[in-house]
Image 1: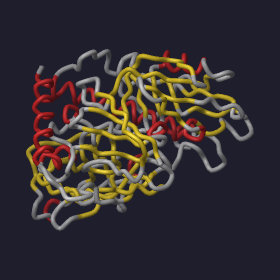
Image 2: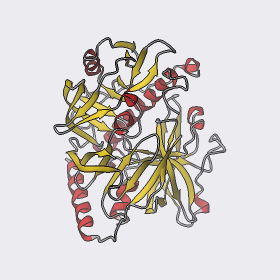
Image 3: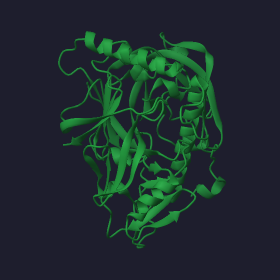
Length: 420
């Protein structure tokens, strides 16, 4: 009940702000996302080790999101079970103004520069619609890589330390904690003053190898570990954008995050909107069906649209049913839910929410051969329990790279449009 009250107040506030504001011309902010590692190696084979690491990261992210919601509101409606914390199995896995986003790790992270503080310091950040907090390394982080951007509150005239702490858990089982600050945060010219964020004082060795400095969450406040408004919600409430809408184009080239509306130069036709179907805090829409070669293989499920994952995930039993519709498909990795299909006869895959069927092109459904010359390609949809029940799928950039994706707080909806 508390969350429903919050949601109503939040929606009314943003509707009122949008109605009152008048912005001249193109008032949004474009953050370019230039391409940089993929789950496909240079020789066209599936990078199994990296994919398992990525899966563990996503399982743990959703575990912590559920814990955050529980911290803020109690167990979410329809809560099934909290998945156990997953750790890497040791050394065996060690084998409307515009700005760019970089595909760090080749389609694994979508990153761009943000500025924090006065004077501003630049950080390379992963923009994640599947989480709701901003965090970066602290200047007190002795374990952080020297190449990382680090936040020093003493160097910012607008920085303020709060009597709180922030914690994240890495895939190797280690914790990272640090103090909470408020400061001015600017993304592509869009400014939020007094924005809450965590500044971690330690990093795992795995994250130290990651080119990004931190993460900026774009989901709803209800899954915020900080119990504060995420950056875009703050910026919208402070009238820094015309519309409380943001949108993504994700691709090998020309990728972009657009804040404050949509970039009409990147898509054509109308945007097909679908209402958010849950109060848990994700960009989740219902009534979905997964199609194979023009026919429905699985239907009637929920889908979370998450820019923070490259792999698409569904409940293991549902994903098994999906691949049964693909001739000669096989279970490749039972523990992590990966399947293969014959490379010579790739399936035509699409998702539908009661309107248009949004197709995934062959390249975006293929992580490459299991090994060179095997003729068996690994699909980008895997079966995995994320603690979200047996009716919720997670669609990451393997889907989002095929559409223009729009996230609207005012409509409380996710929309898709055809890329130009």
